[in-house]
Image (cartoon, rainbow over all chains, first blue to last red; front, side, top):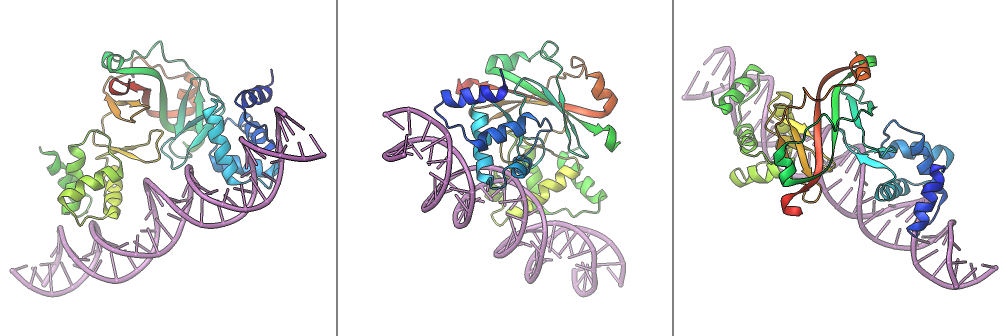
Amino acid sequence: METIEKLTKTLRSHGMKITPQRLMIFKVLENNSSHPSAEDVYKRVKKVYPAVSFTTIYKTLETLRKLGEVREFTIDDDRKHYDPNTNIHHHAICSTCKKILDVFEDFSPHVKLPDFIEKDYTVSGFQISFFGTCKECN
Amino acid sequence: METIEKLTKTLRSHGMKITPQRLMIFKVLENNSSHPSAEDVYKRVKKVYPAVSFTTIYKTLETLRKLGEVREFTIDDDRKHYDPNTNIHHHAICSTCKKILDVFEDFSPHVKLPDFIEKDYTVSGFQISFFGTCKECN
DNA sequence: TCGTAATTAACAATCATTTTTATTTATTAT
DNA sequence: ATAATAAATAAAAATGATTGTTAATTACGA
């Protein structure tokens, strides 16, 4: 099944409208694994859809997040980033160029959660951020 | 050696002035492991030092960060948080009350860094965020 | 095709943080 | 100890990301 069709179904099942803006923003995200900010998304969408507003980008990103279609996260940056890959994975961040690389390794078998967390918390998952410097910036 | 004395020495060695504001902000942080935001720090400092300005809090927090006296980080929140514990440790965040708990477990022996990161990145460290719900919010 | 509620675009507002500027203060040399 | 001065502070304005408001537009069921 096409992912865009899956989105269409999801939207419909939630009684939400299928608008060109939503489809476009979703498509832009699907083809962008560079963890874009709202502004990045806005710029890309604007190329194809010059009349789009920033408000729509923000609203739609929140909609997609609520629907579980994108993951929202912050690094030590002043803006939020969006990731079309909602599967569990981790990140390696270059402290110089701020580029974010995906790390698809599954660490859960190796990371033993401390007992006190298990007792006091209902842990739903964990996220590892590797810090360092990438090849290009070295 | 008192930590406040260590700070005094560090400031002096960097040719920086030892001001009551700096000492107070540092003290507030030392006694606060709840990962306060700049505003949290401001409120606490203001109780003892009512004339303090927000600017000073921000400037001083940046100063302390540059000196390596505090760690700055962001969770999926819209504000930065400050941690007086600069040793490597991890966090457990309650998605309901947003409280942040320290996790002092050393995971480095158990987390095998993927080869491609080792090759492309000079990894300086990693940080694990555990997500879930705390006892009180369950 | 029409009616209507949802969505959008435009714009204003907000919130955290940063910058600017004039005043004050900690320190160093006298 | 005092004065000179470079750094730090307070106050206020500016900025930049994000959110709220409102009126116009549009998707879609009747």
